[in-house]
Each structure stands twice: as C-alpha cells, then as structure tokens.
Amino acid sequence: MDKTELLDQIYECVLDGDKEGARVFVEQALAANISAGEILNDAMIAAMSEVGRLFEEQEFFVPEMLVAARAMQGGLELLRPYLVAADVQPVGKVVLGTVQGDMHDIGKNLVGMMLEGAGFEVVDLGVNVPPENFISAIQTHQPDFIGLSALLTTTLPQMQSAIAAIEAAGLRERVKIMVGGAPVTQDYADHLGADLYAPSAALAASRAKALAAPDGGA
Image (cartoon, rainbow, N blue to C red):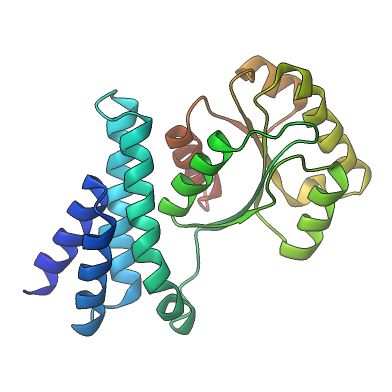
C-alpha cells in the first residue's frame, strides 16, 4: 500500500469511527516512514474537518461525531511520541473546564475531542472548576484559549466570576475566552465579553482554529 492509500485508509477509518482500524493504519503508515505530521494533518485532521462539516449539514449527529473523535484519539495516542520527537507544533493550546457548581462534562468532552481533531493541544481541568484553577492553568500552561462550559442556567454567573477573576489577575490580555453550553447564547457571550461562542462542538473547533490563525480568521 503506498502513501496515498495509507493516508486515505486512516481518513476513512476516522470518518467511519473505526478506532482499531485507525490504529492499524497509523502503525502501518509510521512503519512506511510517513511523517507523523503528514498523518496528523493530511489524514486525521482532514477527516475531523469533514466530520464537522457533515455535522453542520445535519448528515452526522452527536453519536457519529463521538465515535469519529474516539477513532482520531486512538490514532493520536500512537502519533504523539513521533509528533513530540519531530517538534510538530499544535495550532494552539486550549484549557477547558466546566465552571464551579456544574458537574456536567459531556459537552465539554466533545468540544475537547473536536479541538484535538482540529490540531489543538487540550488541557482538561474537568468539572466544578473554581476561578482560581483557571488562573493557575493560564499561568502554568500559557494557553491561547480558556474554554468555559456550563449546562445549568444557575451556574451561568460562574462564567462571569471566572472571567472577572482572570481580569483581576491581569491575565485577560493573554488568552482568548470561549464559552459554550446549552443555556449559553451569543447575546450572553457578548455580555460576558467572550471572544468566541459556538452552539456546537464542531463550530467551536472551526471557529477556534480560525481565531488562532495568524490573521485571526480575517
């Protein structure tokens, strides 16, 4: 199997949610001396971009998106050591967390998977994250984005608290803030002064990638 065929197989496995197949063909591609960067960009990220497009076109739904993301992650586990060795840089770094008082993580996890599929490095702080943990994560990881998630309407004010704490710590200019979750709207994101809002994980990933581009998506 030549390089094009192997990359096509990885692409199709990710698109179809075939985690074991993705791992098999990633191993074969690495054995064939195809660079980790090519495998990541030309097969896996390309496949996840197509997954996002199909989701937005309502041809894919959350279950299909989840299995595709898991297939991508299966291949990515094999690629990571090679990407590090080759010094392949992510398109950006994102710290994600569900705000204090909220224990829901399905939406956040899906956003994290789609961001990884778009080429980001993702640091997941989990659920019930107090403002000081977001501040500590900015100082430790120096991310490009902080992602705040909430499912409960009652925890929406915690988004404002987290952003206020980041501002008070003098860190607001160092990160772009993205917000999301079922009760969040564009109007509320604007009220918070967030840089990015998206109603779906696929859009969150594509908008973050555009915002992380050198021209800021212009």
